[in-house]
Image (cartoon, rainbow, N blue to C red; front, side, top):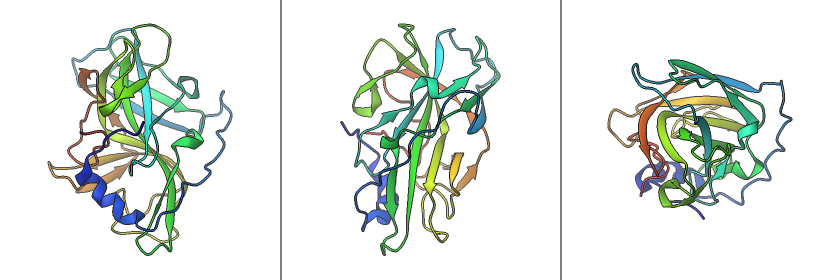
Length: 223
């Protein structure tokens, strides 16, 4: 199942896929364990708290709706979320699942980027099984778990970057290979006014059954 997206945001990205072919084969995930590939810090607004069953989730999504969403397996990363977290850290041990990678071509078809785009969220693991599933439009929950918070930032992984900077690319003119987090400064519009890499992640409490849509631009699961 491919979930619905915000069409206005997707128009920006679709301009880079006019000549896109099939999605690339992707990369094999690395080994888990003590080797950390990427780390970032997250926070909640002062005064907010989380239940002891709170967990971090990553939902990899194809911005062009060509393939289904992919959840990051929970044992591929770790967090130290406490009962009342002011700041907590996350270590990522593996590359995104190969099925999460997608390719976007420039309009002339002479250049492309292969990447994965992940929505970050906090959820309540109500059944204590450590997993989270979605099966409805708007990334609706499939079990008794529920979303607790979303973030204006996203996590991205670039397997292959553009050969040359692309000034019109909605995710920034030049994304380097590897992991990073992106903050989208929207100012209420559909187009990001500013994109900041690796600025940390600030979650916003928005409990519900559907993926919290915190951003006003680059929204990936709006109806």
